[in-house]
Amino acid sequence: TCVMKPLSDQLAALVRQALAVSFQIELADPQVRASTDPKFGDYQSNVAMGLAKQLGQKPPDVAQKIVDALTASPVFGDLCEPPEIAGPGFINLKLRTQYLSAQLVGIPTTTEDDRLGMERVDDASRDTVVIDYSSPNVAKQMHVGHLRSTVIGDCLSRVLELRGDEVIRQNHIGDWGTQFGIILEELFPDGIIPIALDPERAQSPDELEEVYRKGNAKMSDPAFADRARCAVTNLQGGNQQAISAWNLIRADSMATIVRIYEMLGVKLRGEHTRGESFFNSMLASVVDELRAMLPDGRGSDQGIRAVCREDKGALCVFLEKLDGSPAFKGPQGDPLPMIVKKSDGAYLYASTDLAAAAFRINDFESQPIKFITKSLPIALKARTDDLPHDPAQNRGGLGGTRILYVVGSPQKLHFEMLFATVRALGWTWPQNAKREVKLEHVMFGSVLGEDRKMLRTRTGESVKLKDLLAEAVTRARKLLDESDPKRAGEAWWDAMTEAQRNAKPPVSHPLFL
Ligand code: ARG
Image: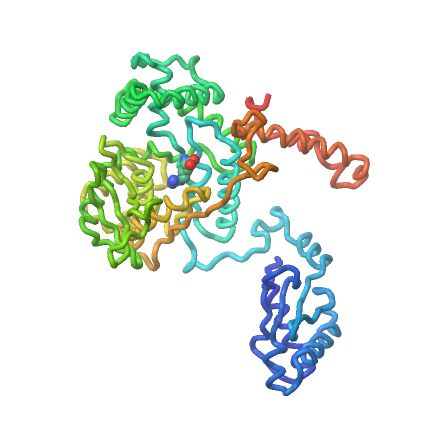
């Protein structure tokens, strides 16, 4: 197979050779680096400047001699265009397009070598990567924004797998909390949820979104908002009717989401779903642990300590620098806390993310977190006992050594505060850990329209992912048809099947019928 040496090493060897030829000197580091600006080619060597002093010659002359020796080498000629000398003696190296395309063609296909010529990472640097991606909200439809997290997350997962890491995909869907209260209240305004929901009443994604939209618009009415909150409390408190209604809505929504995954060809499936609801039974224990661990800022993370205390009835984690000044500030410069429990007893997005972090890191066998309370480990254990076919069975978590969150940049602050808190709790240093568990927010920006604003339909709504994908398939087909006259006769073009031309997904897609 073709396990290649990095190109910079190959080029360095050639420059070293050129130095030996023109100046009879041996240099360990001929300073070949990737260019900072593509204007200056792909690689650069600054070796001529230092050398000129040493040799008592002018830098451009030294550079010219190196370039002459390089161009005399046929190996170099295959790799690079004739080098240019810039400024006081920089040598700019530009790879030949022909060389690059030959490299691409030379990559073994998966049938010849499923490693694509990549080396596997050694055991010591191998990670158990927990990767949180896609993570749509079930009450709303997947929109174009979720495409980013889904595709970036899936690419990263595959690359890390190929690198040799153990990759555990997690779809942290929003399937709990306020949004479901709104839907339940909108669907059943009299508060009476039929005991057995007729499956016929199952909502299509468009209908469900409409229900949510209507309900959400009523949230300015305090009476409606109150009843919606009450529905959430029922749900979170385990009310059977609320739960069965929730189950149905959620299952419908998930079926649609998984169909989109199949269509995109990403590897996320139902079994990777571990949404917010999964962590419900751990939330009270997480709060106990916070109170026990951070009464007055005992935990600290590289200069940030976390203090857990009540503020206007809400339980908060304040993150402060060691001199007591706030590490995170609100718009008025006031300390900005991470709220983990509201005054009405409700838990929030951040509370769930703390529970999820414990679940993703902890493993009672390989790397148990040093918890203070008894209740959180019990809750973790109970939760994994529920999952008979889960790899995390009875181990109280996933044992991740690197936790990735593939989420858009608007949530940057949330993750900074979350990570600081998790570190302050000491959870990133579980027992047996050889190095600190890594927490990383993989950020990306928004998909903008041609007007540089958030992508919207002509009527001003956000673009539904299923519509966007259908449109993409239609346009791609049109492009293919237009290229037919040009390409016909080329073997690979003619080999395309009609199904491939129509970008037919591997399974039937009721969504696109
Ligand atoms: N459901 C969230 C959203 O659509 C993303 C969740 C990301 N993951 C997490 N662990 N917070 O905005």
